[in-house]
Image 1 (cartoon, rainbow, N blue to C red):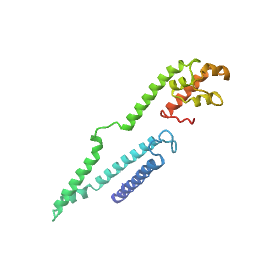
Image 2 (image 1 turned 90 degrees about the vertical axis):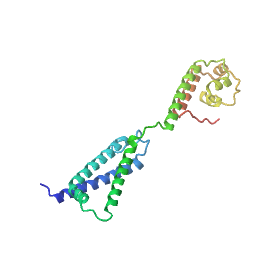
Image 3 (image 1 turned 45 degrees about the vertical axis):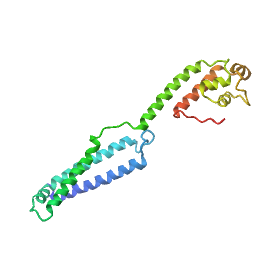
Image 4 (image 1 turned 135 degrees about the vertical axis):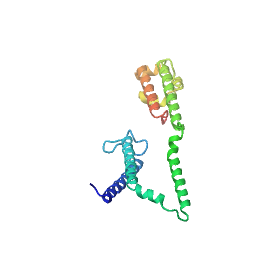
Length: 217
C-alpha cells in the first residue's frame, strides 16, 4: 500500500500537471485557435471546439484532484478549525467564511444569470434575411429582362452598374445608357440569357459578401 507521504506527493504532482495543461490549453485557445476559427483551423486534427472540450475536462480533472487533496488533509483541516481560539482567530474565521461565500457567489453568478441574444448576431440574422428576400425579388425581376429594355432601365431594375454588365459582355467603348439591349444583342452577338446569368452571378456574389460588392466604373 502506498505511503501517505508518497500519496500526497502524487496528488500534488497531478494537480501541478493539471494546472500547467489548463494554462497551456487556455493560451492555445486564445492565441493559436482564436474565436471564429472553428471551421477554418485545426491542430492535430482537432478544431477549436474540440480543444475547448479538452480544456474543460482538464478543469474537471483538477477539481477531482483538489477534492482528493482536501480528503487527504481533512484531519488537519478539522484540527485547525477545532483548535483553541486565540486572540484575533474569530476575525480570521469570519473573513475566511466571507471569502468562501463570495467565491461561491461569483462562481455561481454565470449559471444564475439569464442568457441574452447578442446584438451582432441579431443584426447579422436580419441582414441575411434581408439579403435572402432581396435575392428572391431580384430573381423574379431577372426573368422580366428583355431586349426592349435600355441599359439605364436595366441598371435601375437590378442596381448593377452599366459598366460592369458591358464589361462582362465584352462590349468595348462608351455606350449610351439609352441604348436598348435588343440592339446591342444584334450588334455584339450575345443572348439575353447571358445577360440574365451575369446579373444572377453578381447578385449571388453580393449576398455571399454580406450584401456589399465594389465595382470600379
